[in-house]
Length: 462
Image (cartoon, rainbow, N blue to C red; front, side, top):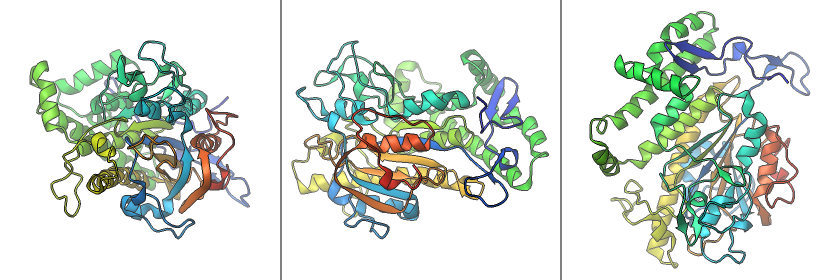
């Protein structure tokens, strides 16, 4: 079966062992007559799907809008999304039932992560016999992954153990992964921005990627420098809008590479045993998150993949957030996030938890701004995407997986009726939402985890 998004011409820039994917140029996309169009043809862009995970639940009193419909007001935690109010759908009363104990006792954080995108209660084990379910992202990747360089892209801001016990007898594989290719194969996320960058802009295989990077280091060159001649040659064949798009893309790649290099330059000459300590001392969560988000944007922009997951923090993370400031908390939050999530209704802890939630939301807003800045035809990359932001718990104090904190951004190519707050009225499996999202991706499924239907209330065409 032919790929309807395949460019009739080239998709890559090449030079000295370097392969650099191109953005989708409108002048090179096939014209497709839209259903219901009366005349002419439209350029159709692929739909992308991303899941951004936040840990430890949320202070839902500061998260949930008080009214439904399009005229809802953004509460404290959602206020960083003010510029994107017409692009988001806030969905309340979604349930992740398989994160409950169901007779297995402790381990709420591990269950929240493992069940979040699978809808399956994980087997309680800290051995090799792990078992969860196939996640929604990997259902899509299995069906459409052969149309892109990478079937899917998994990223995280947290290094974690891949084996052993992490949460009350649950394997670490559950707690540090949300993407599952099969019921026994988690997709370990990439934490190093450099390695994620090389996956996008490296060669055809690991050996070619290492060789290309070695050449860039030897000659102190950017990945852009090696493909510049090819880019200039291509630019002369493009229309004015696509020439500007190419220039903007080249600049974005160069800027991203320089920022990655800047984050590395202070540790590169240190012995390995000192390097990790230096990285921990100088670690900047916000910079790390933004680098990973920029990589996601470029991956979608170039159609290197259409499916991605990103763990802002693993469930159970006790990271402090010194940059999460607010009036009265100008010095930031020094306590660990997990500790604060077990607030026991302490007002100060609840306030600090809300400040962390809002700080995380600010990173989400950064990502949406980047997505919306990429033009695709008469719309944007965000218009042609679905970006679900949320986590597998609501109340971290009791590890409650009901009424999850959920924001869906983008219009899925016109399939999502964005700009509203939807309250389901009764608990609804979050997997019903996933079924509708898979329909939009052109990868429908009759069942995922504990789904019992679809969430078509949020979709105009699903």
